[in-house]
Each structure stands twice: as structure tokens, then as C-alpha cells.
Length: 160
Image 1 (cartoon, helix red, strand yellow):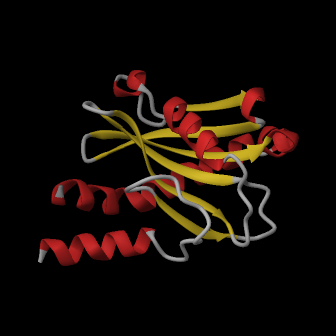
Image 2 (cartoon, helix red, strand yellow; image 1 turned 180 degrees about the horizontal axis):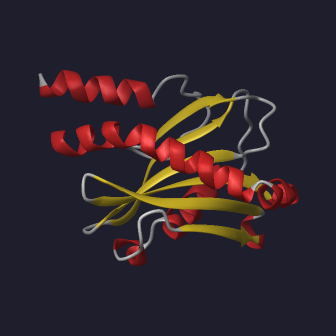
């Protein structure tokens, strides 16, 4: 019964996985964002007290060609949910610019199943205006997304 519940949660995260984007074992990638999306990707991360920051899932635009996505996602994961996030307030948010990787991202911290998680909306650096002009809107969107996926994250945490 528990295995069926876990496979249902996993299948919800692994729909539309593009065959050309691989970010490592256990990281789901779904091509569900509109092809015309200004976002490079949306990253779901969590802090693990043993191994540190972990990427759980990445949503990318349909028909995406994602150069250096792995490096970018690892950086976003490490900074969106870091060891300081264990003590950070629920709902903590940030806007970060990373010229070396040519990305910018808005992230939001939330807690589910007594663990810190983060969602980050990532854009190419030349689309920084998109994040800056819609910062509040993106924060609300990330907050709503966190609220919607929290029950699934709690279910996965119980099954581990």
C-alpha cells in the first residue's frame, strides 16, 4: 500500500520528462512549462541534515535546450535551501543574481514534514527585468505552489 502511494506521488512529479535533460539520480525533470516561458526552470530543493542541499525536481519549458542546466540547478539548490535555512523563517524569500552562471532567481523557503524546502524560479541573466518587474507576483506564485505540493512532500517523507 505504501509503495503504491509513493509511486503515485513520484509519477505526479515525473510526467513529461524530457529524455535529453539528466540532472542525476533521484532528480525528476518535467517539461511542463510553456515553450514560450520566460523561466529557464523552476527548482524544488530540500535541506537534508546528513547530505546537505538536495535537488528534488526541476520543471523546464517544453522543447527546451538547456545548456549548463546541471551547474545552474546545483548552484540554485545550494543557495535557495542552505544550512542556514534550518533556522530561517517560514516563507523567507530572496532574489539572487549569478553573473558567472548567467542566471538570476527568486526563491522561497517553506517547511513540509518538519523539513525545510525551497522553490526557485530561474531565468537567464538577460531576463533579470522579468524577475525584477514581477518579484512580488513570483513570490506569491511560489508560495501558492509550495502550499499545493506540501501534502505530497509530507506523503513522500512518511514513506522514506
